[in-house]
Length: 487
Image 1 (tube, rainbow, N blue to C red):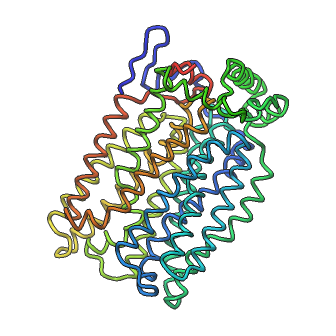
Image 2: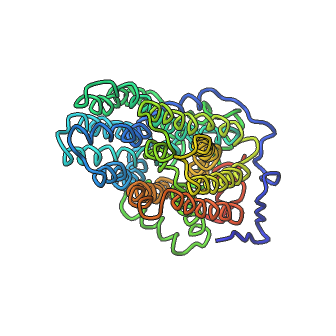
Image 3: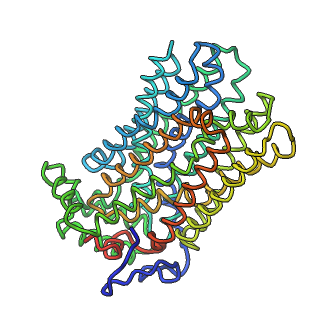
């Protein structure tokens, strides 16, 4: 997997050798920022729908008698179902456009939330999780792709981080919902928690129709004049807009229409390159491995099972547990703001190394604390909670948002939609595996054993980033094709 560039196109991994497109300073263009914000807000619903089960499961168990096994399934299956959405989103976004794909994403969230709110039992809940899961898959693909394609190189890291901060914010809002509605009668509390995700979908779908289509998609469809108009609105300067258009047209004219032509054989032509071009295979392997490690390092055990972990740590009050769960949500959302600022200043690679290193250290300490035993010592329990928060913060300071940023950047234009879909599928598979095995795993090998296991995976992620991922800060998306030899 380690990247070994040839002498004709030297690839230096460190940020201070970022290439010819490195800007002197990050510039600010409000228009692409607002477009990316609007496109990324659908990720709020992603975070909400995935994480709302964290508190809702307590009341569902009491109201309709769902078992621990059914809770594991309901919590994790939405990520398995999201594979369908992730794989379809690439085709949909390439054929019908990025903007209409975001609208469709909101429709799935609307139907899924309504179904879960009105569910009378486990089977109906599974149907609701299925529909919402498709929306989750769509959102994970289309948000970063649109943000990456609309943004100028100077602020692409910042704007492509937006889906992650909105996803984390959605999870935090679900924890607030869990706490606020926990005082309702049992048969209403969990239904209102799910139902709160219905209203935003209508407004978001309407709002998305006011933003422009991706200029790269427009150019690949032959709508060059429209693409040029969008680029002049979203670039830092008119010269940059013209240069971006020239680079896009060069990629398109070199036979890279690939999966967006919608004429049957073109998609197959693009995927043949995976088998024939080492650069394309390497990039796809980077995306899949990065997405594997992002979830296999265990972050969603905190997102979905924070209350159980806190209880095992010695916290006995249900109200305090739900309140501390909000702290996990804040810890996952707030640091992304720092990452957004630093991604285009210090680069992707240093943040990824810091993040995976911090996750490894936190998980090792957590495992040691749980091995000692937290219930018999209030101080140890408090340190365990603080260390769990530190783990979530470390994830949010790099690995959380930048896995999506990096994946969106390095995929060649002709494979970006479907390649992002495959990366998202890997991400959601591992998320589902983590969530659907957590209860059984800690019952089998103890909570300490689980943390040590995930610490080993986080350490492997650190090694992968160090050996295999070059810096991409400040480079245009089209220049990436030269950097990674995917032309």
